[in-house]
Length: 598
Image 1 (cartoon, rainbow, N blue to C red):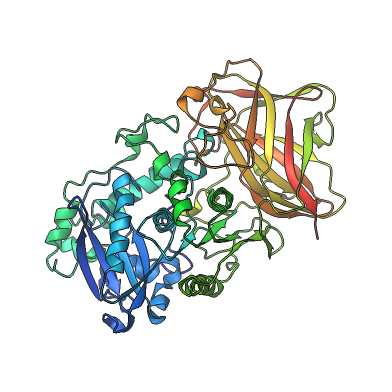
Image 2 (image 1 turned 60 degrees about the vertical axis):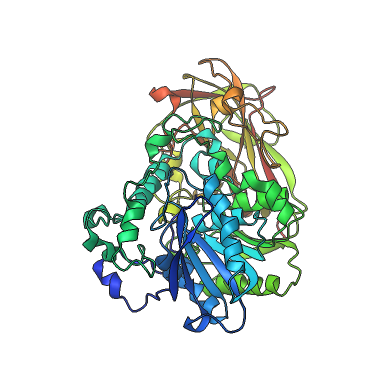
C-alpha cells in the first residue's frame, strides 16, 4: 500500500492559505455514488472545457484514499490536468472509508473496496458523455487500485500503474517475514489522521469532526461534494469511523495470521488476483524502481506471472514519486531519469495507443545503476545472464571455489542501520540516499571478492545461501550486496532479508506466482524452529537490480541481524551472535546473475 508521495511536483499544504490558492483546480462536479450495500463514495469529475463534452470522451480513473482534489492537482507532478486538455474526463474518487466517503476503514484494499471497482467502472461507462474507454491510473496506493481494477469484469481499456505494491506482504510491509515497523507505524499514523478528518501535521490541531470551522481548512485534501455546502455529510462520514491501527496487526507473525480486524494481508495484494488479471488481459504500463521498496520486483514478477497480458515495464532508479534520481553511485540530489516531462509523455502516449487499439506488446526498459543508461529486453532476466557463484571463505573473502573449512563469528550489532533515507523510507517522502557504506559495514560481517578484470553487467536476482548457527531462537538475517571501488568506497546495490523461522523452501502452490529465486511461504504451519547453537541453512533472495560492476571493482555481501529505525528487532529481544560456516561441504555462497558488459 505504497503510499504517499506527491510525485515530481509540489504537495498541497494543509493550511488556511490552501483554501484560496489559485493553482488548485476545483472539480466541475462532485457527488456521492451509492455502492451495492448503500455505502456512498465521493466522486469528482473534471471535464474537458469545464462542462460535459458534446462529443463522447474517454475517462482517466484515479481511485485514492488521500483526497480527490489534492490528488488531481498535485500528485505525480500535477500532470493529470494534461489529460483534461487532451479531451479526457478525469474522474477521481475517494475509496470507501477514506476521506469524505462513507463506510469503515478497518482494512486497506479490502474485498468491499475491490468489489466497488466493478460498479465504478460501469457507472463511468454509462454516462451520456462517456465513450466507454476507461484508463485506470495512479501512483503508489492509487497504483494498487489501478492494478486491482485490471481484473474487473467491467473491463478497462488500459492501466498506467506506477510504483505499486504487487505483493504487499513480501514487497513492503513484511519482506522476508520481518515487519517494516517504520511503514506500519508511520504510514498508519498518517492515514489514521486523514481518515478521521484531522490535519496530517498534528501541530496544526485541525479536526473536522470536532469543529466544523476546521473542515474548509483541510482543503484540498478534504473536499465536500456539491450538495454538502455545510460539511454535514463530510462530518457524518468521518464521525465514529471504524479504522485499523498498528495495534490491529500486533499478533500477526506470519502471512496467514488473521489480524484483529479479521483479515489477512495477502488478499489486499494484486498478486492474489492474478486469475482475474489473466482473464481480462488489460494492457498495462507498469513502473517500478530499484530504489523503491519492492516495486521493481513486483513489476518484473507480474510481467513473468501473466505472460498473456500486454505490458510495458519501465524500471528506474527514481524515488517513489518519480521526482528524483536516487542511483546510489551518485551523490547529492539529482533530477529524475527519465525527466518528468518524458515520464508524462510516455504515459500519455501509452494511453493514446491502447485507446486506438494499437498493440502494446511486451517489453522491459530498465535503468542500470552507475551508468545513467536504460537498456531494453523482451524477457527477464535478460538473455545472456549466467549464474556465477562466489563462496564465502577464510579472510572474509568471496572466492570462485570453496576453501578450507572455517567459520566467522559475528556479534549482532542491533544499532546497525541502513539509515533514515533508504528504499524503505521513500514511500513516506524521504528519497533513498545511501552514500558511502564503509562506516555502516564496520558494524556488519562482510565478505568481499577479488576485483573484476573486466566490466560486468549485473541484472536479475542475486541470492545468498548461509550455513550458520545463532544464539537465539528467532533471529532476523539481513544481507546487503555492495560494490567496492578501488579507493574503498562502498556502494549499496540491493538487499534481502529473512526471519530464520521462515526459512523452509516454498513448493509449487505456496506462492500465487512463479519466482526466479529462493522463495518461502511465510505460513505459520511452515515455520521451522531455530535451536540456539545448532547448525541450519538459509536461502535468501535479494531484490532484483541492474548495475554495472566496473573493472577493478569488487562485490561484497554484508550480513546483519538488524536494521534499526526501519525493521522490527527480532532475536527474542536478546543479544545474539551469528556463526557463519564456510568451506568444503558448507553451502555458504552468493550467486550473482552476470554477463560481460557490452
